[in-house]
Amino acid sequence: MSEIHIQLPSSAAIAYPVLVGSHLLQELGQRVKERAPAPSCALISDDHVAKHYLPMAKASLEAAGYRVCSFVFPAGEANKTLRTVTGAYDALLSARLERSSPVIALGGGVTGDLAGFVSSTLLRGVPFIQVPTTLLAAVDASVGGKVGVDHAMGKNLIGAFHQPAAVFTDVTTFKTLPLLEIQCGLAECVKHAIIKDAKLFDFIEHNIAAICACDSATLAELVAWNVQIKAVVVMADPFERGERALLNLGHTFGHALETLAGYANLAHGQAVSLGVVAACHLAVQRGEFPPGSALAVESLLTRIGLPVRIAIADPTAVFRAMGSDKKIISGRLRLILPTEHIGKARIATDIPEGQIMQAIGYIQQQGAAVA
Ligand SMILES: NC(=O)c1ccc[n+]([C@@H]2O[C@H](COP(=O)([O-])OP(=O)(O)OC[C@H]3O[C@@H](n4cnc5c(N)ncnc54)[C@H](O)[C@@H]3O)[C@@H](O)[C@H]2O)c1
Ligand SMILES: [Zn+2]
Image (cartoon, rainbow, N blue to C red):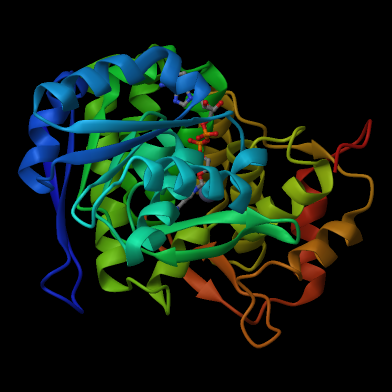
């Protein structure tokens, strides 16, 4: 088992462990008790995950002495809303949860973001425990303390920073994930490798088959490595004022494609893959990144099974959609570009429109329009 410690510089009080291993779910009760002892707790999950893992998690928590209130909501991003949050408040308050009672998110990023938001606001804040069950949630969403829900005007527009008391990742739960979810999680891992760690890039290249087959030891190594990278970035910049923006590599392009294609047609990880390819091409075009490295990125994403080209009806619409990304600062488009070699990236705010349009053109595939 790996243990990564996250400590935020601003406050010594905010420090928590991320445990990554196999069969942690069976020991959940004891583990939670060590971090958040209380007479009761809440277990929040979506209906897909609950079907597989809620009985085991609940039994373990009850065996450790907790009175458990479960709240299960229908799976899917469409339910990451204030309406679901209200349902959770109703259930948890009716069960008389106390200030010390932890809220435990058992599920993917949707569950983690939603349960985290509930825990940050219920009774003005109760302890929060993450038990991520998707690769994406394990390597990305569960680390960093961003919690929240979507609004009709856009994704993740309502939320808070609320750090968990602990993160317990049992990689054996990934075995029931559809392959697409593993591929989408890998898109964020490749992103981490490009911005921070060429050795991770090599590791992914050499272990694609084992990762896609959900080999527990390989997944545990992959998750721990990525958590370490995200932790270093988040610890240096907990409120996203600077360096943390590097984690947005591929995301400004990606969010625009997701918006135009419709969230149902293009998964987030697929959009990130396309966005990463566009950003790499842009950097090559500016002479900042070797063409061979950009090709290596494209080849790795293709081998994973992620898209590197997409049919785009109107490239200027993609450019305009990039302009409405919420990461814009003072009206300037802020892009993350790989620079010099795999493992290094920079924040760029001075990219001319023509170069961005050329990068969009690069990932454009002729044929039926998707975005
Ligand atoms: N807070 C952050 O920093 C952060 C970072 C990245 C992404 N996110 C958020 O994360 C969300 C995406 O996360 P996600 O991809 O995990 O989505 P998700 O939670 O919707 O999970 C994807 C699908 O897999 C199912 N599932 C989850 N675990 C399973 C398992 N072990 N076996 C079988 N099925 C399982 C879910 O029910 C769902 O249908 C988005 O809402 C995004 O905004 C947040
Ligand atoms: Zn992402």
